[in-house]
Amino acid sequence: MLIKPLSLSAAHAGFATRRPALRHAAAAALHGASRLLPQLARLLAATPAQPRPGASAPVIEFHAEAGAPEGALYVDGQLVALLPGVSRL
Image (cartoon, rainbow, N blue to C red; front, side, top):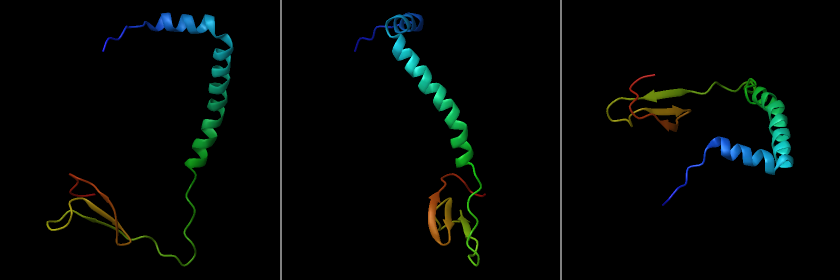
């Protein structure tokens, strides 16, 4: 496969002169995203909901002994992950 190298300045110059409307639309989209992303980040980082009253806290277990799957992580008795190479938490 033959690939022709293209310098960044050559690609940028052609894009800037031939497609100003596309460039402005891309800039507007990026500007809008830059305003929305911090709000989304705050929403995703919000404190998780508190457990229902009367609900018990989850039981977390980690096993790395001989005879058990190495690095087995259980939550409420259900295997949720295997952490290969991890011998303790």
